[in-house]
Length: 223
Image 1 (cartoon, rainbow, N blue to C red):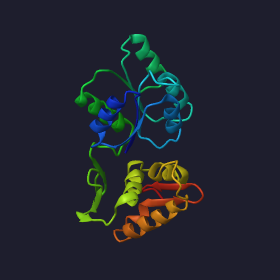
Image 2 (tube, rainbow, N blue to C red):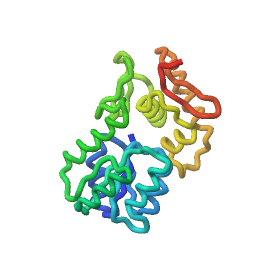
Image 3 (tube, one colour):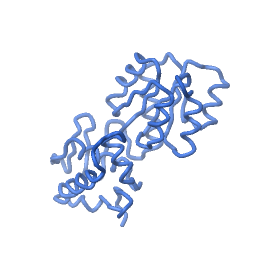
Image 4 (cartoon, rainbow, N blue to C red):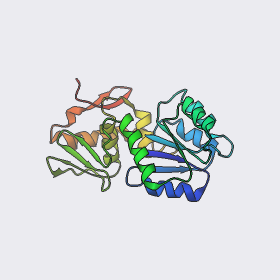
């Protein structure tokens, strides 16, 4: 899981990232213009978005995001007026929290949003048939047998399984795993997916890893 944390207070941003590190990989952003660029890459599972930001405010960012993406957004701000909450929700925010906030409440709200948008999200547990993920240790087992999958290979598999039955374009997968500013060539995606398929074949789970020629990949039980 990837969460974009947009908050210009660096200490608070770091605190939020630390609170959520057991749930997801977090990307801290402190500037509205940079936040908009990151959000438009469509590689995050959730965006935590402050309103008062340098260069571009949170409302503007949210409005632009909603023209191209359904990525869930949790507004996090010091503004507690009803008008601000209504405006945020009307622009497409999924939830709204005011600062200061409690750690447990933030985690609970984040988990609730992720469950609504991802059928495969069950907190720290991700499963598919006999396949089980330990997202803290980044390990995968099938029928309690540990698979030799680590690093980016693990990240690819977890991302595809979490997004079961959803087509993931090759560009999106590359940006998600390597980062859109990576100097690595796109063809590396095909190499990693090919190696992953070989590992899964031993358990006959390669049948769920679909390749859509010239498009991307999808994890699915469907033909």
